[in-house]
Amino acid sequence: MLESRPRYAVVMNAVDTNIVVRYLTGDDPDQSARAREIINGGQVFVPTTVILEVEWVLRHSYGYTPARVIESLEAFCGLPTVTLNDEQVISAALDLAAQKADLADALHFFECSHCDAFVTFDRKFTKIARAAGYTTVRNG
Image (cartoon, rainbow, N blue to C red; front, side):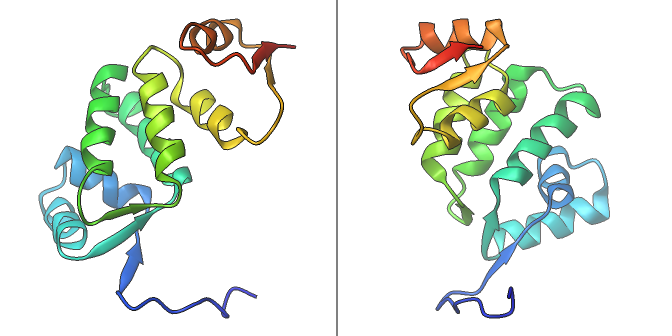
């Protein structure tokens, strides 16, 4: 059951996509100020699913270019108050996305690094990943 979670010595709140989006865009003065207080004021946990959703919202709702999304997420993930559930996976996915891969595909791939191969019908992703040296990506 979810109620039996371990206690941490440091208070840490998890944040939702809307908090991160307000922090990054500053589009709502009141909510953006509160988001800055929350994120800058103490340790926050950001699930990979939130990173994925932030990327989608920034591209589709705010018109950010892929490069601007990656730049914004890299800066955000590097904040001293931000804890990611899998920093290595997110960092590697952001690096591959910076090479024009879709961030969602990159996250899927790196989450599956324990598997023998990542099989996809997405030829563009396969080409980008292989060019970056990831030979375990293959077309289905």
